[in-house]
Amino acid sequence: MTTLRLGLLQLAVRTPTDCSPAEIRAASLRVIEDYANRAAARGVQVLALQELCNQPYFPPSRDTRWHGAAERIPDGPSVSQARVWAARHKMVLVLPVYEEEAPGIYYNSAAVIDADGSYLGKYRKVHIPDMVDWPEKFFFRPGNLGFPVFKTTFGRVGVYICYDRHFPEGFRALALAGAELVVVPTATGPHSRSIWEIELKAAAIANSYFVAGVNRVGKEAPWNIAEFYGASLVVNPNGEVVAQGGQEDELVVADLDLDLVRTQRSFWQFYRDRRPELYGTLADPSVG
Image 1 (cartoon, rainbow, N blue to C red):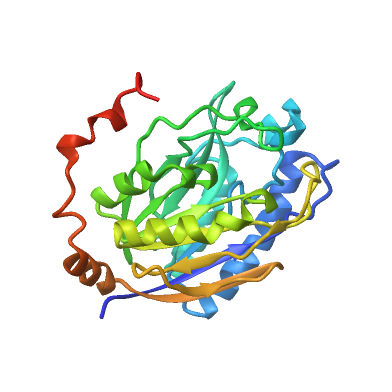
Image 2 (spheres, rainbow, N blue to C red):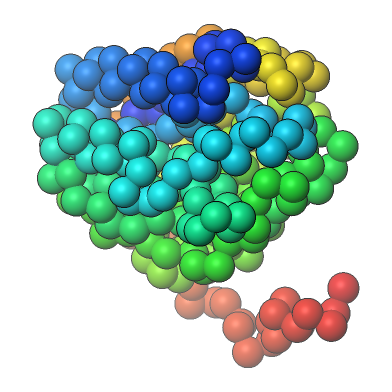
């Protein structure tokens, strides 16, 4: 049996928003480091965090002061510190942060760090919403790196961030690239609570891999609309929830039998029975 012990860290960012983004980042990283130590004590091998893990969910503010929260990947303060934690604990980290590629060019990203502290690469959120409560186009450019899968010490890991999960095409692209586990960091409120589990279960079943959704908790300024409900969960390739969190700060831990990926794909044969030669309209921007 090939097993992976996965930890999902759901947190509220409680540092007052009248602090600077740098001060909020520093306080958040102290909390995250404490939880990384706890995760290591529980034998966690892959630790994944929520969307924009070291800042509040700031997009509704439409305030350019939050550009100060952006940092370079991998040379910024968050990834640099996380690489130290990863090496110390021999733990893979999926660290979602606000990325600055250059002044004025910003992405909603996640860095993936291997268990020796090496930087493996990053995913940039591809689908960017522009809705009343989620005006993210004000802050983020659409990702331009495709759907990479990272070969970590403990398994092949993909990332798909929040609003991305409403688009099944990326889930399938990650499957075709060899993902065994897809981490979905989010900042999800009550608007989509009813479909949260359904979407993640459907992705796990259709692609025969593990899916892990990591959500925020609590009520944060400047969003202030409602509480993020947490409920971070791990779904196996059968579509079964094998671990789920509540609505408070929590480290959710689950043991994943990665051999189940091969077992399910051999049984269902979804990959044998695909008909990609008939799917051309899915990639035709003139349709729909």
